Amino acid sequence: MPRPLPRLLIAGSLASAVLAACGGSSSQTSPTPSPLSTAQIQSRYSAAASAYNTDETQISITENAACDAGSPTASLTACQTALSNQRQATIAFDDALRAMTFTGAAAIDASHLLSDDAAIESLLKQAATAPSLATIASVQAQIIPLLATAVTAAAALRADIGLPAPA
Image 1: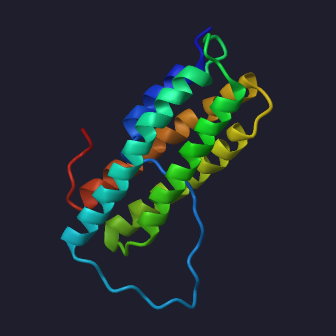
Image 2 (image 1 turned 45 degrees about the vertical axis):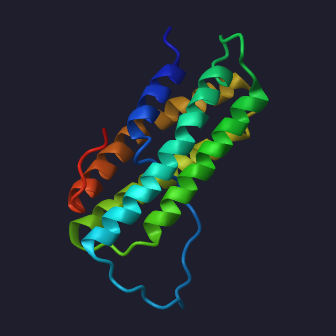
């Protein structure tokens, strides 16, 4: 029977430029941010995605080695740490997204992406505190379809703000 972990890692690689998780909410009493130019939005989005991708590269290496119960390097603690780090990287990406003011279709697609990421972040939290690698694999299997949805939302957002699809 195929293991869900390799599919998650493949999907994670595809989504690495665009995945994120839920972070804190902004205060309702804070002043309305000034609208950003298209170039500023593109620059800030690209910087957030680049930072996430850098983190995700190292996290994926650890996750590949530690989270596969059949691997000789499997380690519950290392796997939990990698998943927790992935959650934190995702939160940082989403916080950067929330700091941007999107309009029109970009606002709708950013909202969809943040919603998808909130669900992924919740599952990553569960996986990072799971009592066994088998439980982690079960939770990761739930993440896979959410990753596909997040990738679609992120691609739409990138197109909305005039960025090419990630390489």
